Amino acid sequence: MRIDGFLNVNKPEGKTSFSIVAWLKFLAGEKHVGHGGTLDPIATGVLPICFGQGTRVVQFLTNDSKAYLAKIELGVVTDTFDSEGKIIQREDLRGVTVARVEQALTTFQGSIEQVPPVYSALKYRGRRSYELARAGVPIKLKPRKVEITNIELIDCQLPLIMIKVECGKGTYIRSLAHDLGQYLGCGAYLKNLVRLRCGPFLIEDALSESQIEDAFRQDTWRELLYSVDSPLLGWRAVIVDGRNELAIRNGRSLSLGEGQLPPEEYCRAYGPDGRFIAVLRFFSNNGLWHPEKVFSL
Image (cartoon, rainbow, N blue to C red; front, top):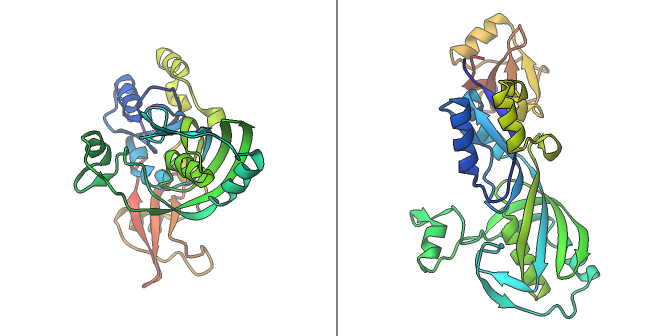
């Protein structure tokens, strides 16, 4: 039986995202398995796992917004910006108050420039950045624009603070912790991280390893899968007739009729029977919607 969809996994600390994928690939006996956004081994929380044709929409999930709960220790700097690294600097916290921390956080909200940590999987001159960093090769990554839509101080028991962050694609919470410490003049590193949300997937609904193993033993795990279109439910949708469904399946662009659907970059299309059939992309040069991805579910 073909397996298509998403599983909302609560990743435990110490496991890599790849190891969770490999584990579920083995349990499900499915070759096409992936994840919707890497979590570092020290991080826990929402890790959407995609199966079958779910792997074809995961790109849209990785582009979606995310929310995190981050514990940060002030006064200490590590080379990796998190608790896995070596301590390279210690500073006292004189002058650091709750009010100063709250004021500092406001400077990181909105569209900001962020330099990724050198201990990351980003490519630098053809190699993974972390490989070069471990080999002692000097690395200077370029800053990237990221979007932090909300940042909030949840708790402050110096030297530890807890913040909640809602952000867009490509944001490194490790870098945010480091940059906050630099702004305060005392240094900081990310001590602990929980992903609360990845797109539409929430921590409250995420399944532990033991819950998933139980579901596999009872052969009820397919009932836990979210549909292939679940990451796209925030998009506009259109139901097409049989003629247009055939056009979509044959890869032909089509007009959805003036006033039927506002021209946005993407929409989801359903056949007359309500089945999800395609991701359509709008091209303003000809005013037509083109089948970007077609599904046979």
